[in-house]
Amino acid sequence: YVYLPVTLTNLLTERALDSSPGYLKELASDANALDVKSQILGQPRSIRVAFLPIFGDGHWSLLVYRNQKNKLPEFLHFNSHLNSTREYHTQCARTALINLLYVFRQNDPSMVISKESYKLVIKNCPQQTNGNDCGIFVCMYAYVLSSRLAKKEAKSRASSMQDIIKRISHVSFNSPELHRSEQQLSFSQKNPNKDHPEREELLWKVKDKDVVLPDDMRARITNTIYHESNLPNSRTKHVVTSRL
Image 1 (tube, rainbow, N blue to C red):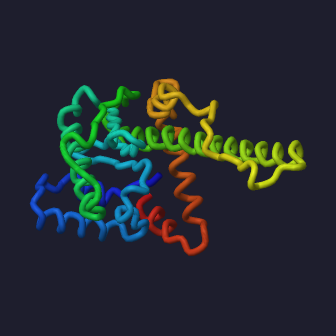
Image 2: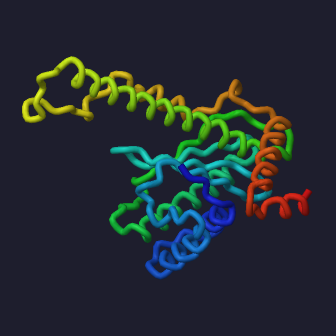
């Protein structure tokens, strides 16, 4: 799971859509230069989920890239001001996602990119009630989704480890005369507890009951920033202090 920096998403949003070889090479070079810290763009197949904050016409929205196994990549767009910004920000999101896929293909030529190779889904999500909370709502959407994904990942790892321990225990203690040549452990059996598709889709919905109030979200962001600023060798403190 990765969060793409604003400088990178601005590049993807603002660049024109052009599939000519020279332009794509320049686009990928500029994008990779902004991704020096994580260098994740060079390994597009390893990205399972990417969060992209989209800015345009004074408004923020959130685009989420979801890499699905045996399915088309899916882009989910969360916009907290759909009534007045739907058309413009949907176009911004579409431009960003196409350019992102162009960069992926440039970095990994084996990836096939076409108009049929992605799906953009406009999500129904909680809406802001004023004209200045769009950034907070983007943070809230990302917070809710990433927290949910982290819990699912932790649960899945714990379940897998428990399953392995049970199988090893069964072989070790219930089969004293077992020989390796006669029977082998299989870790590829179907997991009966695996999430159903409809449960998987629930991970990607942000409803009113999931909302973190704007003031609470601001407090969480501030606490996170100051926690990071107090870490050894952190450069955040000076930046935050000067901006506040």
